[in-house]
Length: 116
Image (tube, rainbow, N blue to C red; front, side, top):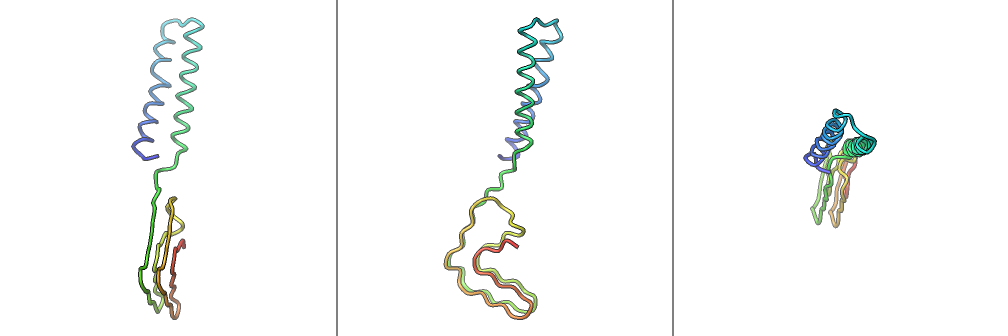
């Protein structure tokens, strides 16, 4: 869910919780209006909680094909594919025919996908 949609749902849910039930309850409601106001407020609260629990839309699809060679030395890092620090991103990641990676010393070389 994108941030714009999340904000829209939150605003509409808050409006639903407050608007009509408040108007109904200000005018000495009968049993039907009280039940309707309670149901509408409950639905608005459920929509609000649902929107707050949604993760932002970070769905990325990464692909690396035939990227070539990486040579690193002296604490360097070489990646011939995809780097997603700390596993960020929730979409697919594919690495095909990424080539060779050579590391010497305290360096790191990765062919494929690096989640570190």
